[in-house]
Image 1 (tube, rainbow, N blue to C red):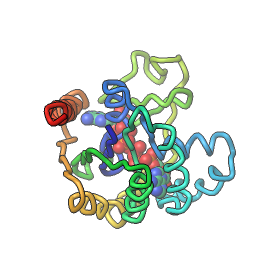
Image 2 (image 1 turned 135 degrees about the vertical axis):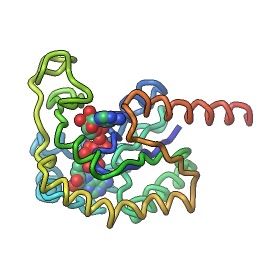
Image 3 (image 1 turned 90 degrees about the horizontal axis):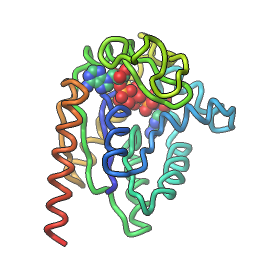
Image 4 (image 1 turned 120 degrees about the horizontal axis):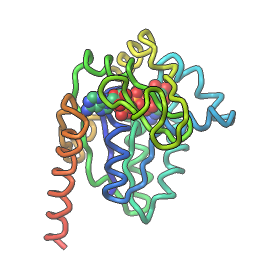
Length: 222
Ligand code: AP5
């Protein structure tokens, strides 16, 4: 399966993609996580991306397409779930072309729908593990010990772009540049809207129900 998960900043893409990847043995490819790793390692790409990310703007398409098409080429056998990419119509077109080159296509697009007030609360309360990337929330998804990662005991941190003023800019960027990607996919694929305002486990149930139904239908066809 090749899945794209769309949604506003803080809609729960990372949380749900990790669960989808584990359940269906897919590679989870998060453009934001890859960029944060590049920054942590001080690479050229990480340095170029830094100012865009810190202000809530998008990293230029040319860098993103090269990075993500490269990452996807490692998932030819396993399939993948994309988190945070594509984020412009140009990125979506380039992705489709790269897949078509290998006689592949996106099988499913899931769109996490949620209002701005709820996601702002989610982002300002988010805490992440700098070591393993696990994501928590100070109210909704607490770790067992406050401020400490359940997986490896590392102290949790707040993302610099989760500051309130940067969050506002990320939304502006989302509405201007990423919402049109939903329309692009509606024209070319079937897009499944998912109510992402519900509790994380309920959202997972809705997604798995959808994915199981599609899996079953494609098995019947074959
Ligand atoms: P990126 O890391 O992709 O950020 P984002 O899209 O803004 O998404 P987030 O990671 O903030 O949120 P999420 O939807 O994954 O939510 P999460 O599951 O963490 O990108 C960062 C930056 O990199 C961009 O601004 C840009 O500069 C650059 N970039 C990345 N990709 C790019 C691209 N393709 N092109 C150009 N530039 C690019 O959940 C959020 C919080 O809510 C967590 O605390 C979580 O525990 C909690 N939560 C999750 N689900 C629920 C629920 N159902 N109920 C209650 N709480 C919940």
